[in-house]
Length: 178
Image (tube, rainbow, N blue to C red; front, side, top):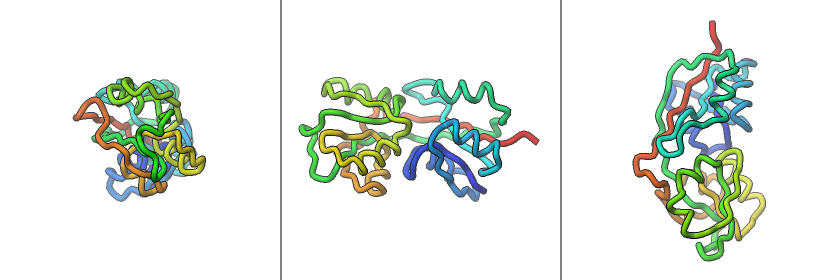
């Protein structure tokens, strides 16, 4: 069963998709694209984040869901462990900017605030990792899952940087009605 999720390989959405029996995860460029994939039949199911225990509701998803004819068939919870990733050889003192999805930046505020780095919002955590691997910017780091480090050839600088040690995101499983 094809299950659409937002982001690149290594995304927390991919982890949620893999929790469904027989799932074949399908990456989509945005939350809206997940809804479109399910509506258009490119995927039988979709997973989108609804709520994070630390950062709250994912407003973009809630807005799309309110207008969508898709049905939430179930919910799955993913334990979210955030990591700071950079290009190999980059040290913490080399970093000037940190890029990630706004929810991930919010989930790691205690780690980020004292460092006074410029925070750059990206569409997804895994997308931020992919972009860093392409841009090769040694002054930038990203917040994403540790799994994305090996996928995109990045180095793990810090793990478990989320504020809440029980940080969990609840994902809605979407399906067409009927």
